[in-house]
Image 1 (tube, rainbow, N blue to C red):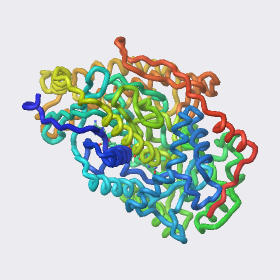
Image 2: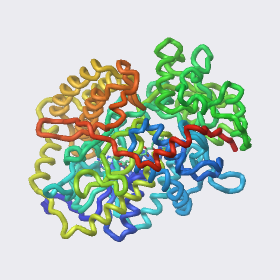
Image 3: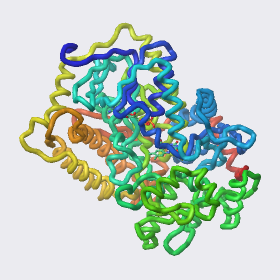
Image 4: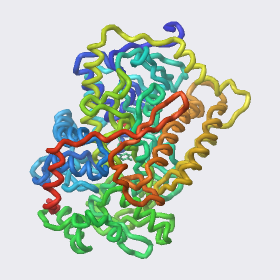
Length: 612
Ligand SMILES: Cc1cc2nc3c(=O)[nH]c(=O)nc-3n(C[C@H](O)[C@H](O)[C@H](O)COP(=O)(O)OP(=O)(O)OC[C@H]3O[C@@H](n4cnc5c(N)ncnc54)[C@H](O)[C@@H]3O)c2cc1C
């Protein structure tokens, strides 16, 4: 094999160079093992770079009442208690240290007047908790991690796409990929692999996600025998651009609402008042006046007893509210809602939301300091992914680990904004440490199977050899249409069953696509492979959604609008079997009494939001 395929060998191979992958690679490298870091795009271009609003951590700089316990409870409530309690606990406890560490490594966060890291409000967080750098937090985070990683001596393989995990018996032995530029195959031998490949957004047409998000890590792991859980929970962010068509879905950060943005329908009504869930209404302002006081206090950095505006409800709730307003005929000219921040001083808007200002100016010719934006729901984040053991991030295949958006468990049925960037830091670090420890303990390197490599390369090259066949772009568009139309923000059983039969037909079409040209930088060929991954995750989403006959978190069923207590006790787990994809229910791990007690204490004493 070594004559025909370029081969590299590492103790730990990290697939994905976003926040999770970089943080894992830094930690593994610090443990003294050899680390390879592979990414499909250029280093520094990962999805994390697009993160805008901030990283959630209970630093308590703005609201001294904050602490890990409240962050833990907010995360569990946001996830409708389907989260793995231990992941939520570790995340809340460790996020502050991870943010401070990032600062020590050179990240320059926005500051309070007395020089501490500034924190902003976000939906579902009781206190102001998001450390941020204007609306370019991800860029600063990636820049810092990349600098640290490069100096740690990682071997980076850029523009290299992994298409298969290789195994020695039951355990991980390496991975096969191809260089995007030359199309040549490359074999990585590795004792341990960390999957940090991010989300699945490109399975949908309207999405905030970039071309890289094709569910590769989830599908690679599934093929290698790993368990996926919570796949029915896809987050639709309430505010994506709805116009012009070329940028439909592009994210409008929740930071706009955190800074005081108001949502209105075409009649000028501030509609979020009527969508606040009864159980949490007490956490929000009583009326426009109290919401205005909250914004004024926030802008001025002053103390206030005012509670937060209704626009800061959780993402699933705001997304459903906008969708409903549009569906009932109260949408904007381009089919969304108005999001208005133009009533604030223009200088402040430009300073706090510079990317949003430029995004709307350049792409839609809209000056957001003078005019309201038009926004609507967009596919944004995948709560589901690889089942991992909380402390180590070990997946269910020996030698396989996962972190970041590709892993599941922390966010349950719905993620709170800002909790992904902290997830990457906390669990990226843990995955890197555990993968290094596993690799160190392994007696001898696992061997890769040449037949497995041959089979994958043959399959990869098949689209060039077909005399006829469809264009992969047509099949991709058809897949996105199925997912948007039938497995979107509101779901019903008949649609989900129809989606399954349409996905089956699409699988057959994808298996016979044809690509033209050579292997050198051929995006059609790349898509032909990515399509297989998107079909796996789409089927997993649809099968799990069809079984969850209730509405919970981001999963809304029109035919089952309420929650089913029996389903509150289980996750759906997806595995590959000899008969195809199988979905089983698995019991949720039980939260220990001392953590349960936190919710009982708090239930009697709701805390006011104090703005500073
Ligand atoms: C516009 C936008 C704004 C956001 N804002 C926030 C925010 O303010 N706060 C917050 O907490 N979250 C935010 N999120 C979510 C958050 O940014 C992501 O969930 C997070 O960055 C995911 O990080 P990751 O490390 O898991 O994956 P990524 O950063 O996407 O990295 C994935 C990596 O995997 C590589 N890869 C993928 N497939 C392969 C393959 N087959 N072979 C090799 N490499 C592969 C990619 O090239 C990339 O390097 C935002 C998301 C978007 C889209």
